[in-house]
Image (cartoon, rainbow, N blue to C red; front, side, top):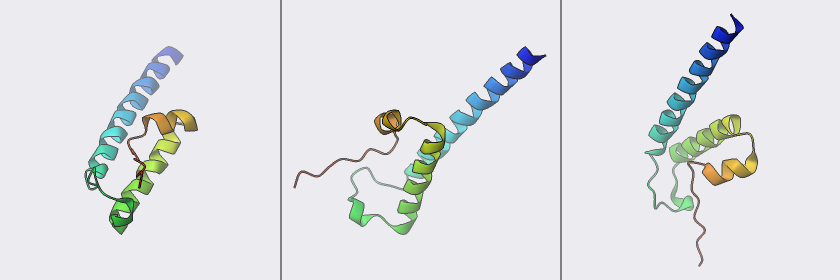
Amino acid sequence: MLNDKEKLYHAHITRSLAEMYHHMESMLKAIPDDIDEKDLTEDQLEVISRVEAIEQEWIIDETTRAEISLLDWIEDDK
């Protein structure tokens, strides 16, 4: 029985993670790729905050999270 429960748990976590990934991608569509941070609206800042919170929950290691985050911050060399 434990083996069946583990398989069900694994399937549920896999499905949930895929759904969460698509949800984050959908939310991020509200933010143009080339927008300057100072031009973000309150709603866009809320999306960023939500995605960061989800990533912190699902990707524990901070270094790994920074490397694979859906949020890609580009430093301006000005």
